[in-house]
Length: 148
Image (cartoon, rainbow, N blue to C red; front, top):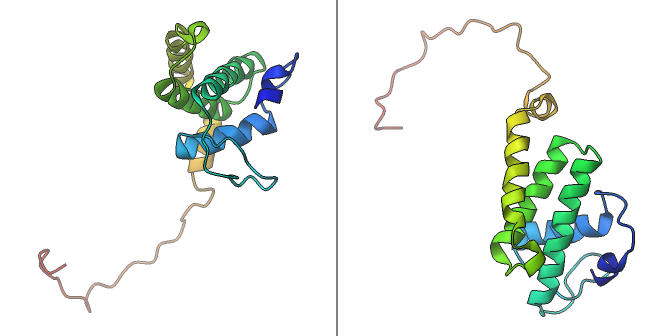
């Protein structure tokens, strides 16, 4: 995480390292100090408050870069969601104290554009039922609802 923060140029919102830490934080609301090459925690020591503050700043930077680089609404929604989780659970440093209001504004702008067609396409089944055979109910019995 320190090497991410030390980068002079943060080029893209889709950074593998930030995505890794973001997924870990999104699931557990905490980060461990060390992870092995396979992404498993290495030890029980969690990231201290200063590390979480740094992580929160990187998450917010990723949201801003995603907007600047016209990321998809799906990615932007994911980024904003995990950023909110960090903002809600971390004692924010001074330079981020006013940013929750800005994040709320960015989220509101995103929600005004939704539902986006690309979000709906993933939820709608591409298959349609065209031929439904009529059901012969003669062999069935009606059961009272309290038996079910």
